[in-house]
Image (cartoon, rainbow, N blue to C red; front, side):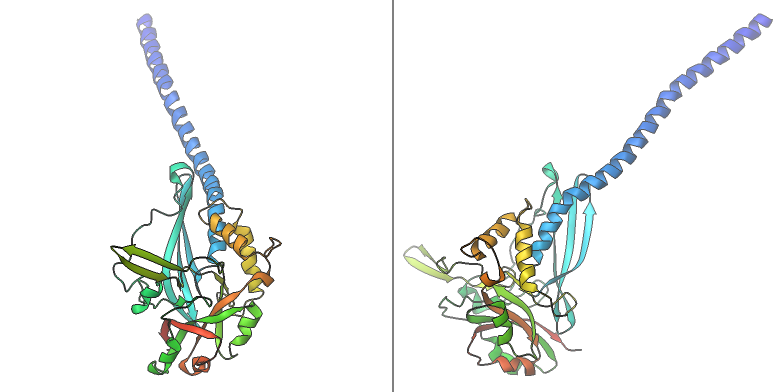
Length: 332
């Protein structure tokens, strides 16, 4: 009888040992998997941040030299696996009024995850939207998708058949409005000269910097079936370069021209979609010594804001070649 009990105990021990031997690798595997997930989570977060930084810095520098009178309001980051996306929203300050103007974004990462353009493509649905890029686009005012009028800039050395002279329309606008206006100058001025041209009671927000050579092509001809079309280049507020002379909260900026140069210099070192444009700007703007300084900057225009009363002081001033309304908002 005792022999049978011993056999039964032995069988139970063997079965118990087998169960333990079966569960041990499962527990070890689960433990290693959890450890891997934890390590990968923290490693991916660190690596993704490092992958984003060059694109984020490059975009930041580019946003500071483009987008007339526009600032970034909100930035949202959506990290993924070894990459991610960042979305942002922009605004303008019109005499202290905050006006939402748009949104955009960029992607970052390695390999197939690197998509700085976020796959963006398309076109405006009709001729009312988008910007004016040639003199022929001036037949209709251009608007953003949010219904804001788009400002237009005109080169001082190009002879246009048609130009915006929106300051002449001030008497058609109510006294309860704040107005944004792009002023194109008759020639290039230094930043200090440009600021002094504008009366003190008009808010100066942004300076348009010359980023082209005067011997570049500004008139383009296209011939089809013995018919020739001529297109004369102008600039829209979204494809000009310059710098704000106010801060994102509306205070007077300190050393804005020096900051503009610093952004161009810093932006050149990042291998992103904006690197080529940073290099082109530096090469175009720098003097004969190859060094970019404030003395090399020529200002072709300025963005100002004000009321009908204050902006009427600009009417008929000889240095203003053209004027183009932008955002118009209610005072209250």
